[in-house]
Length: 278
Image (cartoon, rainbow, N blue to C red):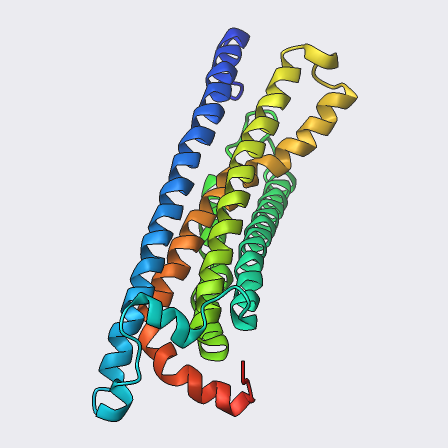
């Protein structure tokens, strides 16, 4: 509305719609993270159920060993010591909680780097293409689109690899108990943090618009300057880090289910090499 030179009343109406959109988006993202939490719970149950199947399948050639393997959930809990007092499970809980925070930090920093690259490109065009500010020349939009597209893909490589590698390494080193702790910690921390990010980001954005309407000193006041800074953080909160935690929770759960046979077969061997006796 501003760039098209429309009447100021148009901007007032679009701001009202934007504020409403932020509120409804925060509610919608709450449902989304809720569905991710329920999906993760389902996959957690599938992982536990799959453990018994893979134990039987991997040791099918040893009748003596088969007789000692767990039969049902209660036996499985005792077999792998899935109690909260197991140090492996507690380590997994901490790792799952930290995974959610590290993932948020990586995505937030990615947004900052991408925005900085975009600012540098805009400054370059102002320097090298005369007449942009006067409307006599057109800026090169393609470069800006290219920067955002490449950054959106490149910056997600490390977070995606972490979400795949950490559950596998945790399973091999800490065993089944560590995997369950990782999933439970990631689910609890990820759900809580995502709700906070989605709501806080929308609230900070709406607070800035509220002041721009004339409240608390209006545009250009110290309050408005502080809220511009808050909105700069709030946008990646509600649009990047918050929604991406849905994927982290689901992806870690799915990876754990897929790699369950690998953990069941090789984690005792690797724990023996490392001298882990818990």
